[in-house]
Image 1 (cartoon, rainbow, N blue to C red):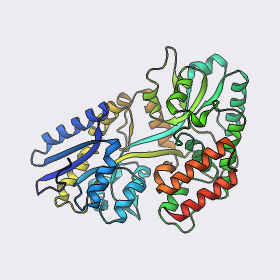
Image 2: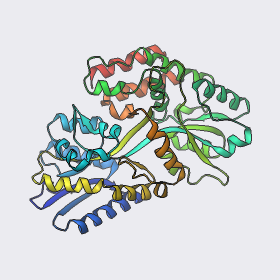
Image 3: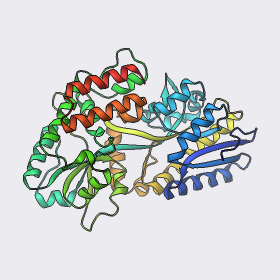
Length: 404
């Protein structure tokens, strides 16, 4: 039962989606206990929910005109719908005070910004990188590729040695999107889908999208992915990677947690998606999306205390604790410390992320629902050979222009 969402002065209703997963529960309990001690004058009415049920609960509350004061939200279209409905409080004046806004990664804050205004503060960020077993590479004498041509040449060599070059389980459609998006980013540049979402009249994926789809199709045709990968789960693909049957895996930074049960001798390491010769994009750009954010309802009567809560939740100390408990990068600068993150995640945060020209959010979470479906079906079709790359590019372009 959700109860009444709004709260009176001195009280705040606070909804989150951290129930049902131990590391998330540990974090939010720590943060809210610390907040209660630091601000005993602000009483919180906390409503927890599991991620799977949260979106429906929040949508119902927003539609009924009885939203919570402060709440967990997702970037992209989910947040955008509330913004377009006039239901979100713009945080720009608050972010400008005392340098609060400057504590966030600019590219992360951009993902919770719509029409030039920030409507939520980003919390954590996931990045997609290539993962490999350093011990397996050393055993075979393989070198980390720096260019896309070197990557393809390495894949051919690995296949020739009887192993699968790239683990991929695309049953749920999203795992293969990293391949297309990175190629589009390298060939055209970052921000292509964001331009559609922000109603830019000049937004387009073309002509580079056709080339990106063609390159993905070529990898599949050459047998660089597992047999039956379009019907394989990402968990099954992960087992191929951990067991040494597949040499590399393009996946998010959650792979660190997914590798915790790797066999003895497995040494997880990562490298950036390689440069593509002749590409127009910044070759240092990283596919990295804000996974969660917190916002304030426009209807909240007690906005000053609501901002105090957001500032506390995104303070460096609380965010470093988030990293320590969840082993996930956060959007607050310098909060992802080596002690909290561990060497692999810290290396990505302090190296790849800091040197990135831009962070491009995950296309599928940024797109409106019908466009996301067109994206998934087109990419699966390209991979199994049933859809031509140029047709997939046109279908996706048309879906994004439709804005649904």
